[in-house]
Length: 129
Image 1 (cartoon, rainbow, N blue to C red):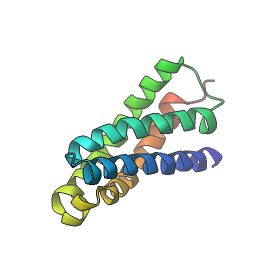
Image 2 (image 1 turned 120 degrees about the horizontal axis):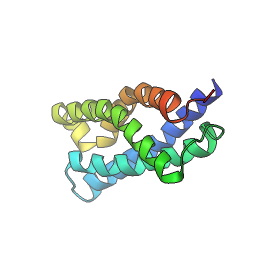
Image 3 (image 1 turned 90 degrees about the vertical axis):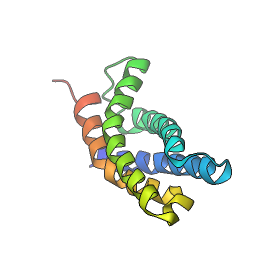
Image 4 (image 1 turned 120 degrees about the vertical axis):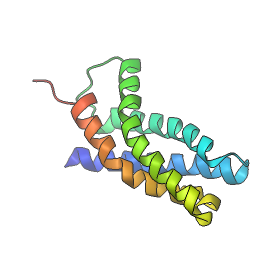
């Protein structure tokens, strides 16, 4: 339960980074919302990896720094596929979400959370017996 709660805290932190970057790029700099989301994902996923590495799964590290980050990014890509599909659907179908893409990030984040937790818990940081 502790891990799930900490993973949720890391997810909230990642959401704030993700939504803040995408909103700034789209509304502030006029970026395409689909391209902006790719960059915001890379930054947010790296931030969540750093948080989860330090707090959520600190006892279950089995790889070097780059290997762990690469596995994290690969694992998060599954959740991001679900997340990006929901985000894109919202952006495409809602003028409100196009104007406020951070709302679409929230929808996508909820959709991808479960996939990301399972991938982290059972692939990257599983206990070795």
